[in-house]
Image (cartoon, rainbow, N blue to C red; front, top):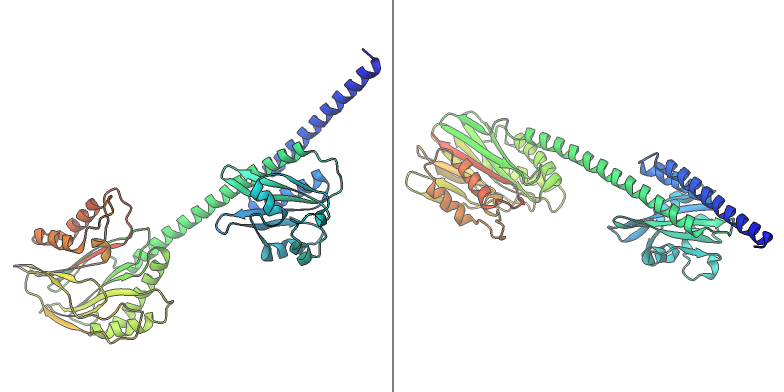
Length: 429
């Protein structure tokens, strides 16, 4: 074999080996650097700095894919202009397929543009906004386990001996690190939300009566309240507005979750303030309606408020768009549908009042629509009539509201609860 040829082979082999060793060193160094943090902001800066350094680029940027909007958004950009990154984050987004980054995101391919001005795909608005001049660039997709994460761009590279394999390996490492940081951020956010909802649930319960059972004179009340989520919009209250009287209030806020829970807390506070030393349920409803009319549109409350004489058990009732209550007497179970006004918080209204007299042993069952709108696995609702039939069969049971709750839960067994459930019993002892 020719000695010169042998020497050339050895030199080529050594150069390739040296290159592989150098690539491995770079990858190891990059991996160690970007694995040092799960903080998204800090990671973005590390990724950018390493990418600029390794590829000897003037600037570098990462656009993350927003799955909700379907757009690419600038997460970070590093160049000599300190304000450029903030401007890009605030004002520039790209559709998939728009610009070079959009093309890379759509086609999931690495792209090298040696002269951006000659490429029709180049999006000039970013340069116009920042005053930066892009001459050439390399754009590579960031692909993770959930698909597209974003696009990394290396801008104005000072060298032309691009090692595409090294770039691909670097972007894979970047993608893994960014995805891990995103998972970490999501986990922290979920944990934060979980803690906030737990606190909200505790606070919400504090607005309800301390005990679900209340007794005054010949009147005893009891309640069951089960939110569909950790927090809900159903509410009830037992108060003594004036001497010798018991006020019983039940309501159902439109919507569910945190917004309904916040609205519920406001309503309870407003109700207690407005009902103090007032012996007319319609007056309380009128005033509460006025207060709630000032809240954001789309939020309203159906409610029943009754004031009961604790000795005679005569009562006055005012209804605001709420389902009828059930009146259990010694002979029958009556569906009591009284004259009513619209739900509170929608339009100005003078709410009507009705007068009733209870006899010894009579019971009233007030409920929210979550009781009779509960669904089974087939999607069928239990229905108001079925609830009435159940109450008729168990009218003599001491713990009727607990049994009714169990009946509804058994009907919807295996199905996620979609609405809050509240039942209030009023009994003339």
